[in-house]
Length: 355
Image (cartoon, rainbow, N blue to C red; front, side, top):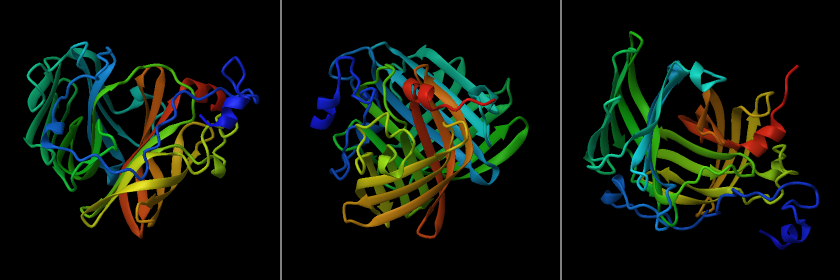
């Protein structure tokens, strides 16, 4: 916290303007060396050093069919101290105002922990979701069947780049080529596109409701030779609308971390300027203007247009808008996720009522 912010706080934890002190600001790791992953990072890790029950490990996968505005999300949330896991499969097309209005939703909060690891396993007898690591950090197969509801998919994920580890470790993001097929209510769809997966481990992930502006996790892939990832806040200098309530977010300091993968080289991002444009409801993202500066001072100007979207409460204190986004960079078109993470304080103060 800056000295200016400390001086302006009162005993209630608010600053003199009445704005609360943010409690969920992302550490700024821009420009720091990326963590170098090892093959062991494909698999399960030890719990957080604290031993707290909120210790978490996650694996996130998916697929998209941009020409049909179809997106699929596969999320595993392991709780090694509690010896349980959560699992979800979501498939949606176009725009949805509710998670349950998506074409397909199948989520379980409480499932048994994979005691034999995740190199090759089936999630549970109630959820026929199977993973097989063919080559760590390079090739992974995912198969899913729900015969009762008429949904199935088979995916082969092949890396187009080495995993890029967040500075300090405990997380990586990696662009993948995804090929396979989707059976959705009697219709077969070919899958031949890109998706960026991630894996996080050995840290606490408490479900506390925190105070602060939306945090956006963004990825895009333009081909085997070009991809990006960045996570951070809008730049308050661009007037996103929340700047007066969360003054601790300073102009030019919204980047958590990120990278540019180009022509076989992965470079850390050292700074970002971003502005999210939203629907009339004040919440739902419709487009993004992003400027990334890498460690070699090369500027990458990226524009994103949301073409499929759904809200998901990863846990009850948080809502995430999952957005299949069409990105434009250097005259090329790519696709990927923009996940806009919102907490109660932001939604309560910035949702615009209708009528």
